[in-house]
Image (cartoon, rainbow, N blue to C red):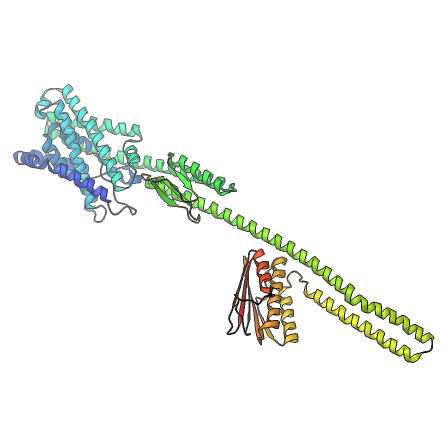
Length: 567
């Protein structure tokens, strides 16, 4: 197999990969002087093998397309070269002849990958040649010793070639950051039946090349056409098989994410989100070294992935997690973030509903108390007028019966005065009662009445700036806003000495904002005179509804009260 290609997500080789390539090149360079000496001694032989290796290596077959790892039909030729050629010469012809079509496409691969491809191939050939030399010390003599020894020599060289090549490519994948070391090793030899089949084909074709070369070196050319057909068949089969495996893996991932999303919808506490997410990722990554932490405490040595929208929540996964698996982790993080946001919104909605219920209870309690006060006023202030009128009416009747017209007229005037006073006081009580009533959707009209009353009674010009019509608001919120605005207007009338006041409303689906501005003399909000509790009571009422109450003013003039209440 050859080096992994760069992808859009891994364009620059890592430092560890560069050091690894430099080490391979240094070891390869140790064999070059002796290899060059053999080339000088037998140039024709060297050129034939270089051309042969280059021809079969020029076109590649995708071995692991998901991580851009390819192979060619060159391994059997390299194994045959390791058996038939001296070790230094086998290293040299492999290094020089290991062309790759990507080397001739500008911008498709880096010099580091080219160097890795050639160096690891040359060292793999060196290992195979060394193993073959241990079985048959002299290659030329080995060919003459018969098929059994030749078979054993090729088998040993093929085994060493496959093992060393798989290990070198796995290390390259790990150092370049494409896969973790364990996953890179598994990817190089898994699925095992395919690896074993490749193993046998390399040895079998290598043995065939060795036998044909022993009979007649030019007969090796007879393998060109079968090798080309094998190349095309292997390429098509590998691409189809890998695409099927990739599709299966994608389906499994989607099923896992779908199941995870369904389970997260049933979560009612943040702790459940943590448990469900950890279990799903451990199953998906086949690793127990996975942690989902909502408080941001991930064990050392794990790679951290933030949970979007989850505050401090994060996921810890092993540092050697594959790039493909990281996509699953990131998708899981997104689902966890949405689940946490849902729980947060549900909790906030519950708090708003509880605050609104408390506010409604408070309004009902105060309404009951206000009705009791009005009833007491009627009893103490209106009824005495009516009782006096009743008594005076009896006195008028007595005076009329006694023919005392002068006294009757005086008593009638007193009666009329008592009735007039009672009616006047009753109108005041009813007017105060009317101002306490807000019908649903009547906030705008109630505010206009309050501003008109301020103008008529105190000469302060008022202006209302609000959408027409106002959005539908909860009745408790309308009552709260009206009471706060009335309290502010009362302060303007009593203390501000203002000429103008502006009440501005702005409502959205989630919030109503109110601002009351006057051009009066202002005051210091931090030093409110003793005995004045109006602003403090308004602030308590707004905060009871989980709202915000702010006062901005100065002795130089003008006061602004801002109120925000969630809906």
